[in-house]
Image 1: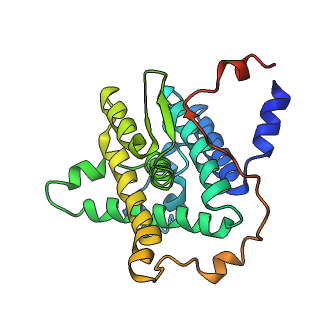
Image 2: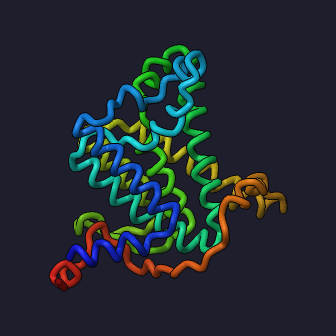
Length: 243
């Protein structure tokens, strides 16, 4: 079993593996009180006045306490981040990294601007970690690019991937989680989808062209293509009993 997990981990593409590792290590470190979340959360005043620029990155790595919600988001991160990198961005690691950079920038900008709007500032002030939103953005982009794939939610009902973000949003509301976090991810995901897929087909121009210096950071590598036929939230029983 340990060997199978190790093989699964090694087969992950570089961006997915790096982000998943950083998220798990950061969250476990905070749970064990090795790292303090107070040094990670997004605080515009500390970023600007005390030059704590790392907060612009670390707030995307901490997924709060290790509970069922953490397991769900780790599954979403490992599953949909991997599917995007292996399929839609196959051989385009720099473009995938730029997508995450764009999403993180949009999410940060929304929170900063929202914090200055009367009557909304109190709600945005509570959003100090954007890791869940970035994960939800990847789910949204994947669902837009694969709208006809049939899925099953916990074995309760089936639907097509186009409705996945709305199903997950409804589930978050049912379990008492904040809908704001998921909505922010949907906004960032839709902004990327429109500018990368819809707008170029309308005008012939691509505003989100990856900068050359980012492309220089990544060498094109061959990636094994995944085949997401009928996606489930849990592996089939025969796979669980294989070992």
